[in-house]
Length: 78
Image (cartoon, rainbow, N blue to C red; front, top):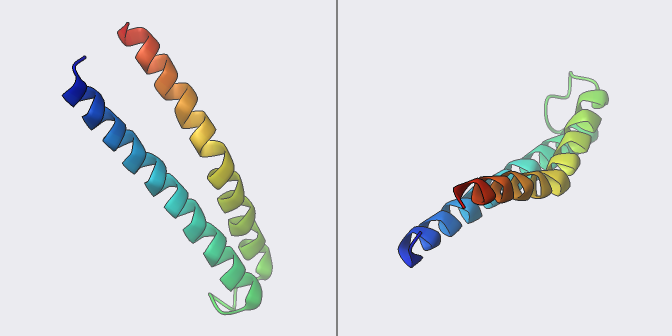
């Protein structure tokens, strides 16, 4: 793998990581909005707590999971 391919791969992985974290922050924001009654007020706040928990877990665990997946892929490429 030459330098250009490595750079492209790093850019793709960085974008993927940023998109995952951005999505998690959106979930946390929706959860907070639902708990406060600003987003879908007819739905009980339990949905908001669910969004909040899922977003928080996603924010902290997905980067670790993606890193492990990418390390396996890199090891298989040799």
